[in-house]
Length: 372
View 1 (cartoon, rainbow, N blue to C red):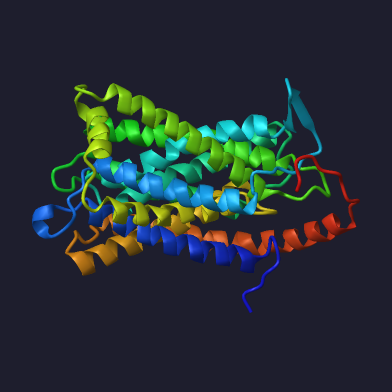
View 2 (cartoon, one colour; view 1 turned 45 degrees about the vertical axis):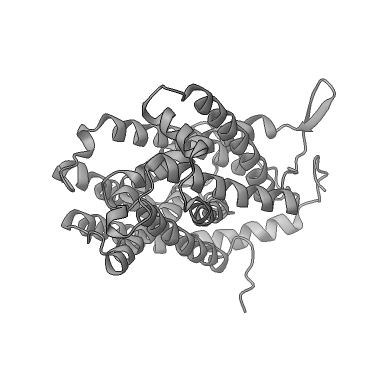
């Protein structure tokens, strides 16, 4: 009874439910492992949890990719560099993986700041919603995007932007922390947004340039992207470790987390696997068949935002964490309005997807490069 068709609303709902569940676990884990040791929590430093959770997340993603052979990308065109011949798409999927290597640690670092998970979610997810709309506008002008962005989707973006604006405009300080006055916080968020902007453009370029009859190989895209991200993070990790001796600051903290691991590091690695599972559903929603970047970005980010709300409430109820403030709830209310507009758009997108699937079935079968 759980079987659904590719590109259907049912399949989209399944992805969102799984995404929500694993992201809620991730949000609770971040606050739990970095809670004060005096209050009964593990008391991990931000750099410690970042290292251990990233190992778990990247490890589970790589294990699935390699075990299932998802590193083969279906393509009509190949490129030859010396003795190697590979699908042309690899040339831009690898840079997308490098951007992923920026997104992964900056996401954890955002959660590590002295703000609620809900606030971090609103700021990151709302910003990416706006980026998704910009990507659609750019690709439509370039002639890459053939679909029209509905007015209700633009309204959803507007309310999402309002949700993002509440926290900075209110000047809210949680525990004396002013986000906009923190150089580290602004740098983390800025890096996250810049990397996601490039990544969303690449994902939609890949999706929107598939020839008719050519399957949308999301698994191949995900596999190559994750391999590239893991390699990039490993190289950066080695460089930071080498430079960390006596350097002070984050580099020395990273080195210390490796040489003198926290007693609960295996559990932090295990908790990181939840974030690794999130990566699967995140990419598959972003690249969901028959949807624009605006629509898919809204679905992806709104789902994670609701998960952030759930994580904040669970942590507050179970571990005595801070309950959401009025700005948190105001942001969530605007997000729910966005969801209402998005539901209207989905009815139309679902009908379009049925027509597109019928055309794909009627199209001639194409040869592929890199397919198993």
